[in-house]
Image 1 (cartoon, rainbow, N blue to C red):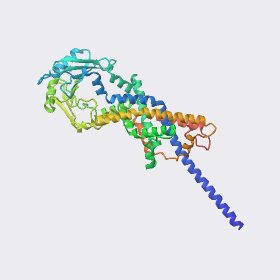
Image 2 (cartoon, rainbow, N blue to C red):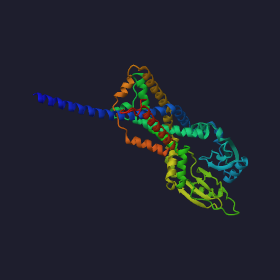
Image 3 (cartoon, rainbow, N blue to C red):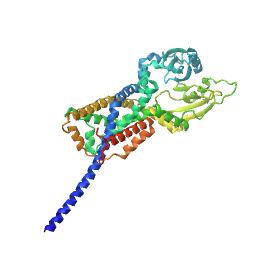
Image 4 (cartoon, one colour):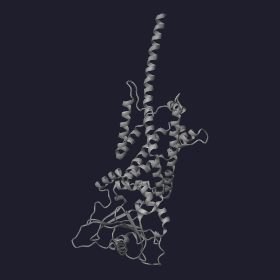
Length: 471
């Protein structure tokens, strides 16, 4: 009997030891997984605290820019509308209007001009001179041959808003800051989605709704989570498409597009002939208007350089509607002979240029017109809500830690009790992809990982896992 009892006690000890070992291993795995959650939480918190105010500024100015053409028309109707022409009146020639504008502004280079969509719209000419002065707009009445409007574009309200949105009114330095903050907006969305991601349908309903009863902390937390979840995809699209036009990442994209022949007109050039002058633009437009009609809106790019071409495209919008892309036409003409060198439709457009145009339509909310513009404004205007609720979450947590010197706070208890979740490989792939495609974000990732490694070395103790450190 004694031997049986001793054997039973031994088996119990072995089982207890095995259970303790398995529990320890399970606890280590749970702690490791939770540490990754803490790591992403710290990145999310850091990006939100430091970049939140600038992200709000970028979002609010972006909301204005969504309707910038309409706002510009509303602010200066005298530059957009001319008196109704006499019935059956014929406009003066395009070349005559070009000569008029060049005589009016002789010290600047004429880049391009627009023919409006309606007969009551003047022609708009765009010139450039001193880089510090920026672009110069001139409007001409095509029926009377008179200049009806003249302004420096940099003084326009929407242009000032655009400079705040893109450069913070500080030139290339501000542009770099905006690119960095926009990239961290992508990090905010990805890490926020990871921490919010529901385990089941019930948790999904819980994560997409806001309670009307409960503590202020609970309502604020649920509001932050729900609003962020609803607009995450839209904010992610805005940030990703904005990076296409940024300083460093955008320059890389344009360089690749140029190298692969994706830039418009890069494959055709004019053939200079000694003693031959540039042909009149009227000869070029006669061919086009016989194809698309006299009243079709056009954008005419004038040749600037010996090998440059006349380039005409069949759209007036600076921000095209994506659903109208199949109506797109573009013609290139030799500036000396007037011979058509190339005719392009949407199917001829290089894939990288297609993506560039797609990014443009998404970023400015003109994808399908007014519905997406309204959606873009709603997404932009919810960012201040996320910023305010995020700061409140941080403040409540900070105050709870200060007040819980003698014991764990309720917030800490909830965090400690939360079931650990493995890090999705897709999230890691997304973050690495963001760091590779956008160099400024990649550099910041390396800096953060270096900091985490340094903290691990400084705070680590033999036999203990201190990575990541306590936030």
